[in-house]
Length: 155
Image (cartoon, rainbow, N blue to C red; front, side, top):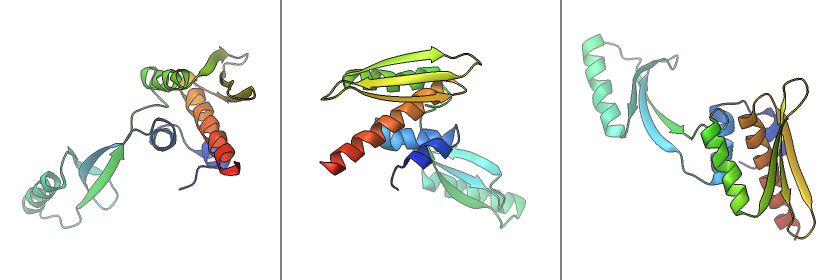
């Protein structure tokens, strides 16, 4: 998947935005969990660390419930960057270590703006406004990452 400005703007807060930040910004691999679900993806038995554990749970549930519609689903669980202040602050620290300056402001009307400033070569600003500081941090970090990728591609 290629990161685009549209994807950054349209991704939903939560697992969708967290996955983008994990993949493109922090480069932290997700935790893999295996869940037993039904056809409607209602979780019946959750958070098995190994597929074999999920298969054992599935076999037990199928024999106990006589339900053949149960499935094993692989889930990638990323850190909660877009909903946790502590996890969002990891992003701020990451960009600080990369030489960026940052600012977070609470705007009139309740929105939040996060701005990253890169002084490498020319002064470049990357900012995002959102309902929460965590979301603003995530979106600004993704925009900065996107612009850096484009600069490298053009060089």
